[in-house]
Structures are given as structure tokens and as C-alpha cells.
Image 1: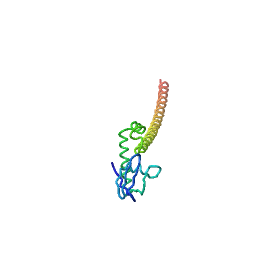
Image 2: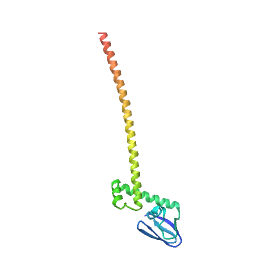
Image 3: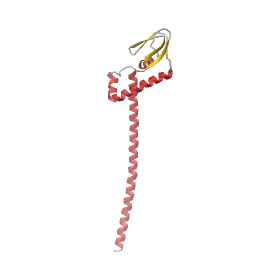
Image 4: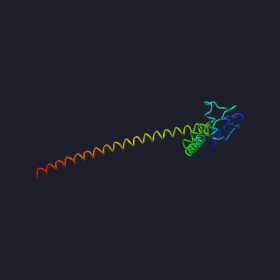
Length: 161
């Protein structure tokens, strides 16, 4: 599991997120990225620490760690599939915590992809229908020309008989 390098100012402090408690010492600390994501998003921005301040050492490295964790979770969800993720969201391992919000985001993206592909299929179907209509109009024109030619040929044959 990837980690985020954070810096704590002040005395050591205790953080509690989703029933997981970490003691963070003064100075640099490596904490699991899922704990950090939960910490950042907990209680509408109110940090659950008993004292001091906590911030990432390197914003870019933090962003990379969070993106990597998100991609890893999305790959895991892809392997499980939509039905299994939905079940896990309701009563399983994804029913709470950081992965819960990521699973909801993943399901939303799958829903959007299905909507886009449905729109693409509808557009393709409409295009095929238009092409078939043009082809049938051409076929009707050719048939009318053939009937007129046949009538003229019959009239000429009768006239010269």
C-alpha cells in the first residue's frame, strides 16, 4: 500500500478516522494513503486530531499517491464488476471508509460510460436508418425507370408489329 509523507507540527498527536487510530509524531511521518484521504475528507473538513497541525510534505507526491491509490481501487472494482461492487457497497467491505466513496465514484463513471455508449449506439442506429432510407429511395427510382422503359419497349413492340 502506498503512503503519504506528512509533517506534524507540535507534539505527537492522535488521529482517528473510521475507527482507525494513528499516533503521529512531531516531524515527518509516513501514513497509509487511504488513512490520509479519510483524514482530509472527514467531518466536513474538521480534522480529528487532539493537537497540532498536519500537512503533506510534498503536495505533488501527495497527489501522485492519491491518484495511484484511486487507480488501484478502480482496477480492483473493474475486476470485481458492477454487481459485486454494488453488493459490497451495501453490506460488505465497501460499506464504509475511503473505498466507499471511491466505489460510488467508480459506479457513477460506469453509469456515465453506459449512457455515452447508449447515445453512440442510438446515433449509429439513426445513421444506418438514414442510409437505408437513401438506398431504398434509389432502388425505387431505378424500379420506376425500369417500369417506364418496359412500357416504352412494349409500346414500340406493339406499334411495329
